[in-house]
Length: 398
Length: 236
Image (tube, rainbow over all chains, first blue to last red; front, side):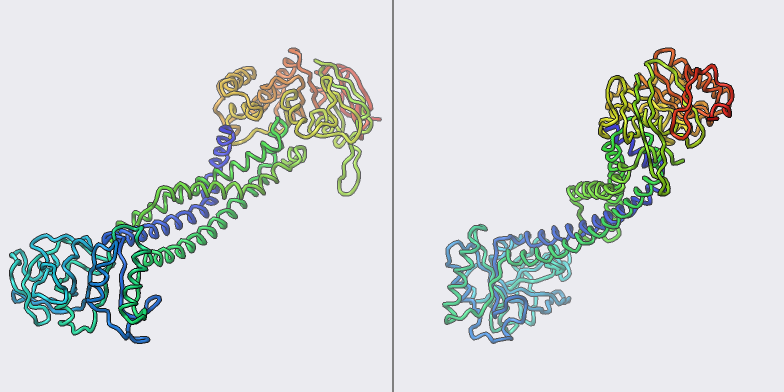
């Protein structure tokens, strides 16, 4: 077999330009597939990472009933508001570790003669534990009855930087939407979450936020439970308790992180399918290229086929010889394609630094293996033609 | 070595049946040197290919080294060719992209001989045709005579008992041709049975015996030394 592969390599090397051209189809196909899967896989990891930084054992309750994305509270109408009392009721459920009640809006934050319009989150003070946020300096207001507000605020590091620069901000006053708050803490930098800069925000007690934004109800309740095994039980209990509190109506929507990731997973599956289709088509085109080239090669090398038959090659050996040649062509094409695709991916990463790109090595290896298989398939017809030649006729061709 | 009985071979050419061999009976003892002569289309190539187990007769029997081979399968015939028969062709039939050594190695690759043994035998075979200094040359870097010597090394590297040559000097100048014929004679002296198809009376004269074919029939058998010119040989 090693000798047959060597012979195949020599045959491929014998027509360098032609071999390169016939590899091109497979190479381009594999390169594009590697590039697309690199971007796809990079995106998948990026999104998963984004969600994971908040923890995965989390479900959210929003007011209004909507199966997917819609306008909660507008269609159908909400008869019962989602209240802080609802949130407190959920706090008592078994398996629940933290509850974050949350109401947000945009407001102008002013201090030190400077002002800035940012997202202002009305939250309960347990978010460092619930969202895995870290406080760099100071801390949140004391936990207590969330229905009663207090004029304390925690600033995101970017907002603090913009308002106070290098000065100490702890204990200073800021005006948020016209109300005075004392700065009790500064957050650790957390970066972006799906494009939103969560460092450029302020956190205030949820009761203050409801008043400030004149909201009739809270925007979202996050329920954090101890571990993934509790997900279904907690979700069921949340529904039961809230439905009971809302006079038997399920006028709210529960979304688990798992459900969000499932939706995302479905999107990724569609993309994967599309990439797979592209891969299939390009491999088909590449296979036709190799088949054509091998078919011509058999015609050209009729004399050689007759000769090897005369000196003791069986039909089977002739067949294997041409199959190997097709496989070598395709494998080289696939390898060039993988290198090209990874090169393009690296170039892209260099050109657009923010773009999440990741090429899994298993994909690269798989791509080369699939190329080899494609080559073998493409080689079947030419190899059969070669093996079927009558050696006498073949030797007569001159 | 060779015994043919009532060998017939007919093939279709442009819708017309061509009787290439008609009731050919022949006996070639081991170690003999036989030349086959005859005009174009007389069936001498068909006879050579039949002897070489490349062509199968339609009827008749062919014993090669005591074994009836006329009815063997393609696979079995390949095995017979591999181990018992060497071919030399008019147009050399070297694989152009392979070196002289690789061309000579080819039959051993298909026979599955181990690498070390192949290397040894290649060197010995090329040395026997005086081409030890051309191991890594490609056919296009060799003269016609050198190419045919490479082909001869390839034909003998498996140490066949029967060597078949189809116009071995047809594409060569006189001196290269003589060199090839000397090598063939030398092999024959060492015991290899040799069958040569030729047009050339000077080639045939070296044979111990000459068979003359006309229209698929053996019309004459005579000692090689008695061959004079082609014209009188083919007269009925």
